[in-house]
Length: 178
Image: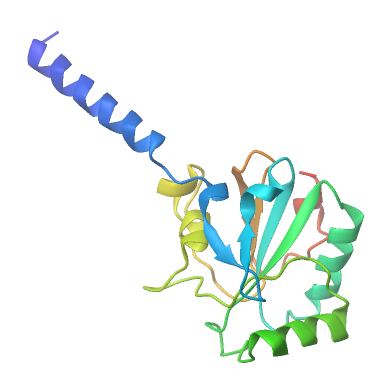
């Protein structure tokens, strides 16, 4: 084999490995809770996490009930994390206290809810960059199409799959992994 070709292949391999070693893991991402305090994603190591971009005024909002059921059923094996977003039809216009009150009063939500973020576009939060970009999650790329799209992460912090809004939280598509 040509020595110059070997040299360049070696450089490319080293650069690729360095890039992989510098990749941010899910557990390294910073995000705040709805109350504004840091939500430590590394605290969920050893459990599945289901991230769901949520909205209070959406046709899919009743899925909060199924998300709470899923959270209760798989407690200790799965943590559901709601991620409020106002990018789809302006269906999450409320303040943090409005969102918290709505979730508790209407659906008895006890699972963690984050600060309101952007899940797409130029201001996309690093969590959703990781969830939607294969270069970061190592599994697949996707686009968040609407409220209540779901992303399942395994206990080691690797993306399992994503599910569009029409997939119910307690669907076998999700529960078969738990």
